[in-house]
Length: 146
Image (cartoon, rainbow, N blue to C red):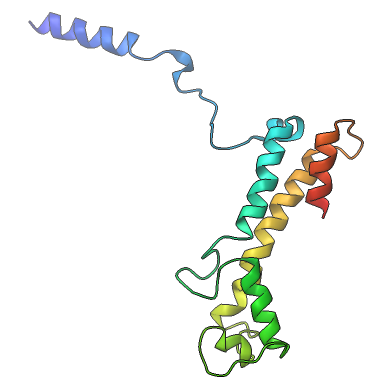
C-alpha cells in the first residue's frame, strides 16, 4: 500500500506539469517588444490614455470633484473666476483658492490625472521609431506626441 501511494504521488509529480506551463505570456499586459512593433498594442495604449482622462477617482477616491479631465477644467474655471459659485459646495476648495496649497488633498488632482498619462505617452513615443514607414504607427506616435 505504501509503495502504491509513493508510485502514485511520483507519477502525479512527474507528469502533472509541463515545462512551458509556467512560462505563459501575459494576455492583459503588453511587453516592450510588442509595443514597438504592434500597431494594435500601441492603439490599445493610446485608447487607454483617452479612457483614463474620463475616469473617476484617479487621485481622490470617492470624491465628487475627481471625474477626469473635465473636473480639472471646472476647477481652473472656478479659480480664475470664469464661473461663479453661489454657495460652498463641491469645488469650494478651488473657488476659495485652498486647493493650490501643497497640504490640501485637492492639489494632487491635476498631478494624479495628467502625469501617469504623460508617462504612458512617453512610453509609446519611445517605442515607435520616428522614421517608421508604417502609417498606423506614425498616426499613433503623432497622437502620443500631441
